[in-house]
Image 1 (tube, helix red, strand yellow):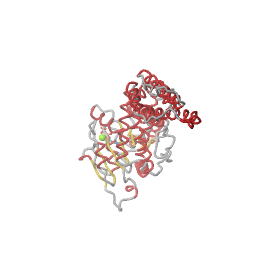
Image 2: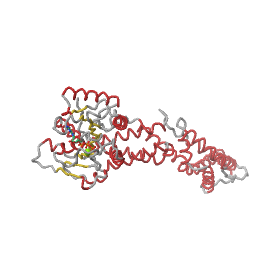
Image 3: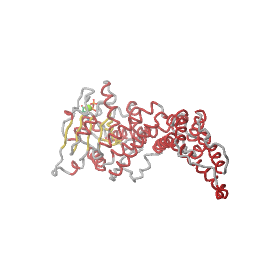
Image 4: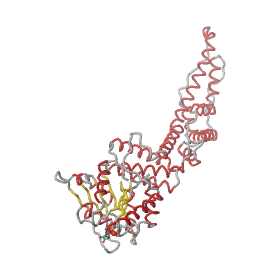
Length: 459
Ligand SMILES: Nc1nc2c(ncn2[C@@H]2O[C@H](COP(=O)(O)OP(=O)(O)OP(=O)(O)O)[C@@H](O)[C@H]2O)c(=O)[nH]1
Ligand SMILES: [Mg+2]
């Protein structure tokens, strides 16, 4: 069983992801009130992390060695690197500061982001004389983490900080503790749920007879399936004797060369954010913008525009009445119309969205005042009482034209207020809803529209 890493176009993948992250950020900024507080913090943290990771470029692949104390992470780190850089040892736990090894190009920005001490960084320069197996590692940033099951809370904190930042998790499991609940329930299950790119090695196999090693590997594979990691093969290795390391190195080289694992990890992060958000969305609901002209007409009528149009029409027919009927907008009416609009705009959505749209749109009081002011300044048509013989024939036409023109001017004045104060904020919230809804449908098993189906997944 092997994991496939398919080289794809990293640039279009990054662009698509960047856009998605940007949409999620603005959606969250507009509509975070619709999201439960605990989810909100998680989603904002995810947005920050994804944005920062994409900003650092996906040419490097951050591979983190994670596992329990004594499982052999530091020994394996040194074995992959071919140098004794990380401190491995007998006293437990040994590692408390993360070590990093970079193959080839400079990765200081990435290492700063990961918070790796300057003294704990090693660069494996690559030159043309290096053999192919080594140059294939170009772009890899390998991290030796402390133990996740540490008696030292600082170690656990470091692991919990770095694990979500890694692109590929390399779980190092030892035959004595492979069934450890802390590993499975706290980490592997979560990595599986979040579909994080992962590899698993069963280390220390030199200490077992071959049949025993395979039996443990099979049992570990069974436990991983329970965790939801069906597609992650267990690689039996010995960091001490080098057994199985060629296969592991080939897997790592494949992942690094594909240059899509970092993007894959960001994508997995976004899928997870989508899952967190799904509770705040209604399944299958599609927010619809209510009829804008209906709202405008109702508000204009309530303000007296229609009455004024009637008076103008009558004057054009020759009546002596006053056309300057009062144009007043009552706060209660404006508020009622606004609430009807908010109800229609959030029909089928969870109740929190009603509050968000209501808060984003202008309140009845300012709506009424702004409409009154707009109507007071509107360029109303001047209509004189007709005189002379010709006017007798034109009366009917003039009257209906004057009526139409007055309605038009009045409604345009109302629309000029309603568009920025009611319609646009509603559209923005709808967009936020759609951006979140789109994320909940971004299942990792469906490739992006840009056509990618890249690195290993823990499907
Ligand atoms: N026989 C054998 N011993 C190993 C193997 N890998 C590591 N060891 C030994 O196991 C002990 C612990 O190894 P480390 O690499 O320090 O383990 P670690 O996972 O880094 O431990 P922490 O830093 O405490 O989390 C050391 O004495 C290693 O020499 C292996 O594959 N086979
Ligand atoms: Mg260690």
